[in-house]
Image (cartoon, rainbow, N blue to C red; front, side, top):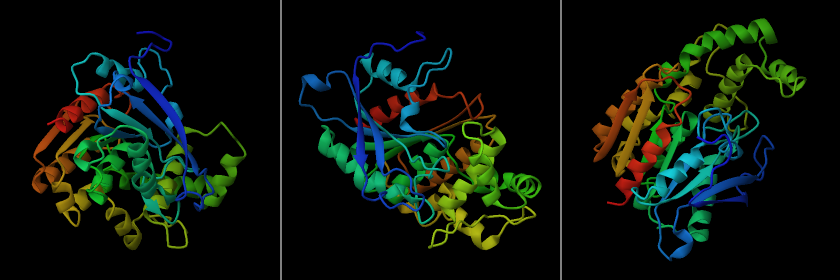
Amino acid sequence: MLPWSAELAGRFEQSTLDSTLLRDNPLGDPHQRQVLVYLPPGYDESDRRYPSIYVAIGYTGHVGMWFNRTAFRQPYPEQLDALFAAGDVPPAIVVFFDGWNRFGGSQYVDSPGTGRYHSHLCEEIVPWVDATYRTVPERDQRAITGKSSGGYAAMVTPMLRPDLFGALATHAGDASFELCYRPEFPQRARELRDRYAGSFENFFAEIAQRPNRITNAELGMLEIYGCSAAYSADPDGTVQLPFDELGEIRPEVWQRWLALDPVVMGAGSHREALGSLRAVWIDAGKQDEYYLDLGATAFERVVRAAGVPAVHFELFEGAHGGIEYRYPLAIQWLCEQLSR
């Protein structure tokens, strides 16, 4: 494995989309967004059309991070290229996008607290990709995948827009909110009390004084606030936390969160949309720190109950991080499903 960039069999194109939907987002985040598109080997030598797979990155991730190099781990784009270069997998166009904002992520939903990131994907990125590249512009030839918050996007986006996406793969995606989010609330309430006098305004003021020095504990605080901005902002953009100063649930706010839990969605109002999908891949590490292995199991049961015809479910030895090797496995499976 080379510690520097490898020669690719396919190629990547990076473009900047000027988003109308994000232009006036409430956080003032950039409306010019990066999109990275992988074109498989042979794309330039034919007029063939290809299925497309969209890749959503996890919380605090953005498109520019995909080529980051870690010792003894090959970057995902290079793993992806090697997969298609081997010639054993039906080729596809792969689109990398993100939902980055000043809180580290938008959960890829539309929210008055962050902006219209779900609509940005569905109404701007997808049409642009279909108009720019030789895709097969049909829902049964389009899939979405991701890990963690990206896995959450992969689960909920096809349920919200089954007309656009016909298959998905989720790696340790946020699901079963009672398990993956709620246990953190007392800890965050304590940190707010002891370090920030009970105020997120004080939290943001403190981290603003230390650029490039945010701690892991502060990232946890930022994520809870960012998820609150995504799941439970008022119509005027005011962010409502799902817990009070004692770390106890605020029931009316918590219900807003649960309404966006993939397990709740798939078992309830979005069951028909979920059941319309062609194929669903679900996996997670058995030692996931956020209990997303349990969330994956719950989502798998909902998927099967909805009647999805092709389901791959797997719990493997591993935690939440360091599971990039799983991504090409799901891409291969999705390509095989889309080619049928």
